[in-house]
Image (cartoon, rainbow, N blue to C red; front, side):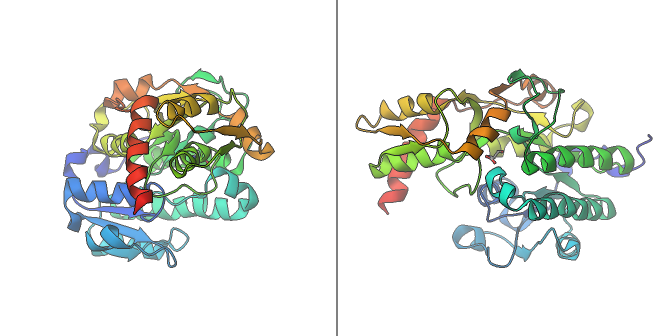
Length: 332
Ligand code: SER
């Protein structure tokens, strides 16, 4: 199918104005500030939904606007007003909460994506919409999961992520919309908490350690999943959107990886630094079933070759930083 759109020729150094949809969420709250640091506060609009208004630095460091993916007009208005050329569309429900609200997960993840892509097509914006390790399923090779492989997820979260990849590729092929994406591992940060994901335990465990509490793991020992420290995740998103498009053979979505561990390994990394820390197990069947269907570790060689992906943090350096930052945060 011919690509007709002129915007495909833009390189990301032409990027002037950015909209982050979901700017108060797990990724958005940090990505918005990082983008403002790099491009200047006035060039990055924090898009939020009523009830999740930006506060503090997020509110004070740049423009804000209501950006509800289920109301395409709200996105179009910001894109027009601020001459936005790049949209980070971070609106989504995480895997566990999505299982209890499948219709809402679809409405936000896919109907919402459709609205964002239509705005992007009309106004010539590039679009980043995250995919996830959740886009894979039980039939996927679990070790060194290839870039191009079987994607038959068993969760509604995964169904929306595979659809996100397909729809984003379709808009690129049919309309030349500059869509790009990564498959994020479980993301770990000391700032905004995740909410309702399968990988959340790897954040919660640090809070328990710093608070001096025993941690109860909802996943069995031996349950390996890809995980990533937030600074690497932010770099991945920005670096991919700035990458030279002529080098990209893939678009939606690149495997990216930095570390893979099970509850025992993260526990040991923490216990080395917090000797009295204890962990027990109380397996949550839903979380366990979801985790068992996801890869143990992905092969990210395409991201490394096509746009120079290279993570900075491993389990040890992340644990060092998480404990240090959380001690400060929780003592305030
Ligand atoms: N962190 C997500 C979840 O657990 C996976 O991408 O749902």
